[in-house]
Image (cartoon, rainbow, N blue to C red; front, side, top):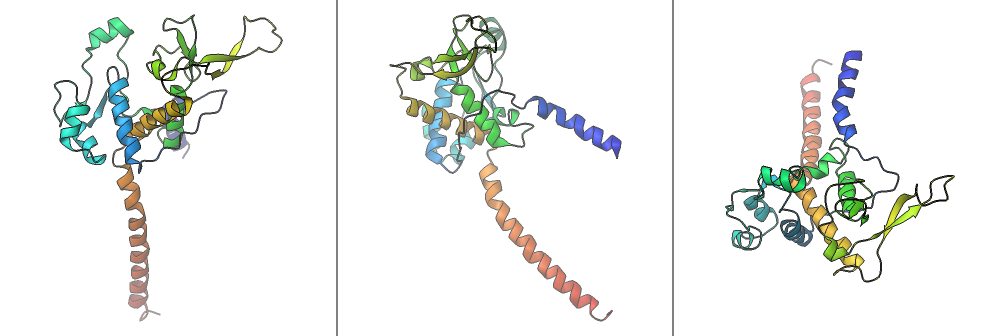
Length: 256
C-alpha cells in the first residue's frame, strides 16, 4: 500500500510542477464551448496572430471546420495561408533552425497548452484562466530584450504580439518591505495608459477570451460531445441498475 501511495505521488509530480504559483489572483475568463461565434473568432485570431510561431499539430483544419460549423471552402480561404491541405494538421512554416536563430528555440505547440497549465490537466478552467491572465498582463519593461515583461511568466522570451491592439500597459509597483528606494520595487499589476491600442480594454479582453475559448476547444475537440453524452449514460445506468435489481429479486424469490 505504501509503495502504491508513493507511486501515485510520483505520477502527480509533473502535474504539480505545471501548476501556477503566483502572488496575484488569476483573471476569470469563463469560457463557453457552446458559443460557436466565439470559437470561430478565436480560430481567426489564432491563425492571424499565433500560428506564425505556435502550431496546433494535434488538430486538423477539417476537424476544426466540422466542429465550428465552417465549410471547407471558408477554412481554406481564410484559415489556411500556406500549402497545407484541408486534411493537414495546423502546423506553421517556421523551420526549427530558423526558430533557433530568431527566437532562441522552437516555440511550443499550443494544442495542449490549456491542459499543461491546469495542474495536471484536471482543472481545465484554471488552465484557461492562466492563459487568459498571461495574455492580459504584459507590461512595459525596457530592461528586457523584447521591451516587455509579464506578470504570469517573469522575463518571458515571448514578445507582446498583440501590442498594436491592446497597447503596452505600464507596470504598477509596490515597494518591498523596508525599502523606500526604487531599486527593489515589485510589479503587482498593470495599467493601461490613455490612448492604448486599436481596441478598447473591453474589446481586447473579449478578443483574448475568444482565443482562450478556442484553445480550450483545441485541447479536447470532443469535450462538448463527451459532456453531452454523460447524462444519457448516467440515466441508462440508473435504469439498467433498476432492471438488474428486479431481475435479482425474481431469481432469488424461490430461494427465500
